[in-house]
Length: 323
Image 1 (spheres, rainbow, N blue to C red):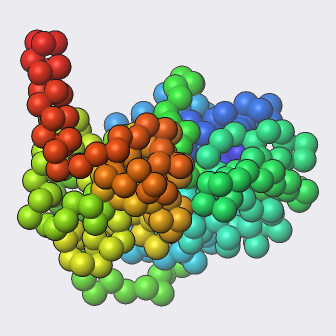
Image 2: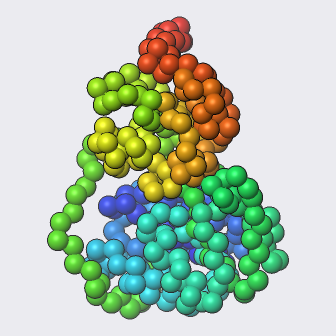
């Protein structure tokens, strides 16, 4: 059986929650077994019901006051107890802060080989062999896990949602849930309504070629028109032109959108390390020798400040024609 840890975000499921269920279902199908979903904390009933659309046949839902705030030691202890009472051969987690905090503890507890930040299904399960990008996406490596059990962390927005409707049973268990050692003094909840970068299908990102914060209006307008999240390179965040939360790259957020628009971004290796998992990269830069063009699927050599207004106008005309 494959255990899928299905994270809830303040009582709700996001795309990442259903994506991990989809991925675990596909791995289970390869192994000729089923998925055991684990949900910790209070979650809306409709969200839980939606998991059966993505192949979760059995769900263990544990609600306990000690699960708030998130403490990786407590969560790992609870998940390990559930695994010990079921015949678990593999674990899958989302490759975000929470998943990365739990996965190594589970791997150590069960002496399981761990492969992090995977973006595709294993090539085989006997032994588990999986291909993943290395060297900031410039090469591929085949990783082989020879232990009896395995732990995988799935890169967000890399596998997608794949429906596999099943009939799901929801159960609880008598589990020891120790008190968390963490005390939250203050919590800031994002109520901006913006699309989270790690979940966005489309991302419009700007670099130093945008010249300054006062020139960001057209970029924001274009992103809003196409329903994209906004991002930036590290120098832009360091200069304070954009909030640090928008910084993508090796030292910022690592993302995998369907389309990544790199506007005025030179394409330093540290930046490409955070966006190389994008399915398509569209680059606009005035410098024809900019490194970003080596990674881009589509590139335009030109002034982003002249091209952006033209892109906005073209998109508006296209939408008007559709209506």
